[in-house]
Image (cartoon, helix red, strand yellow):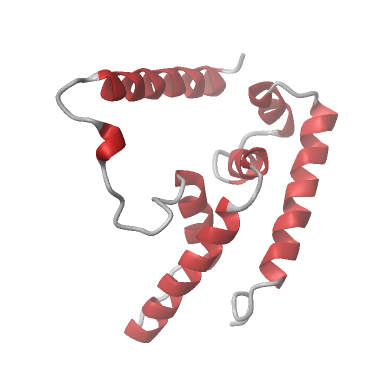
Length: 136
């Protein structure tokens, strides 16, 4: 396993252990926490994907428009299949090769490549369905 994937695996294991510890502590019940966002917080990958796809806008009116578009985009990304989100994040943000993504996902190279291409196509179709998102 390449060193980057090994570190990614170790980081995931450490986060999982911390999550289990947090849920097992008797001093505070994580299940009783109330989210300030309707529908709960967006998943980390949807936030990252939305920010990267929208870029940075500067004026106050553009920043407000960007925030609205980001929420729409996060909803769209959260509606995607989790494996589609994962393969897009691996290939674009973690810059993993097709072979490395296949190793992490437990797929063959061909299956990982097909999954990536289908995820891109589904994202493209979904983005085209959001009015104003792809307009300058």
